[in-house]
Image (cartoon, rainbow, N blue to C red; front, side, top):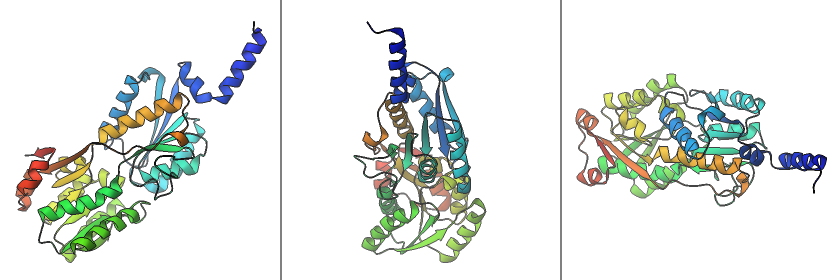
Length: 326
């Protein structure tokens, strides 16, 4: 029989050896650090999907606290917000997007990090490979790099005579240079000239569209970016004012008046992130959990906007649409 003192010693050793696993098994309070470059209003439905999935996995709201930190489009705040979450001794990070994931990883090498909607985690140096991430980062990629070429292809179906296409991008976003290289390869094959237009801050958006209007392209591709997502209604309105066919990387834009969007089904990305959190809290190591890629995509077309700017959406595109906004 094991003596009481020996039992306590062995239990303490187990807790030290596997703090997250023991933490989850004892049913104690779970404290999750949530870091995003976005805003709570923009990401409300995504956070709800994450919470619901956690609940279904056995993490009730009354004992599962999500410490939320939102940079609201200001990437210079991310490092400080990540440091705050580390100081709160969260059990695990959930980081939304590439800039937030980089900030989380720079803040800690020991706290597990579950990333969501990171376009190119290997190319941006967040993981060693999709199959064997290594380190303390794993999670869900949104495959945005591969999708950037698809955005260009869809836009060319809508605007087949466009000889030049503008691309709205932020050079400070660590994954945008990767997106740019991918979309440039597609443009070269199609014989289309790309015109990069930069917008790093909200106050630069109006000027960016003034530049776009002067360039007079046949269409616009908006690259995935938390800042652009926050200001999606403004971007969609500016594109409509210039009667510019534009394609976006998420349905949020078409719901806000954008013409067409194509991208991963975002609620599923956040539900899958909850599954990663569950596995890690039960003892799995991020280094051993392969990065997942989205399996479900959606093409959304806003016919009201199409009529307003005088663009005829081809039947071939409408037949492939997941949803049509009338």
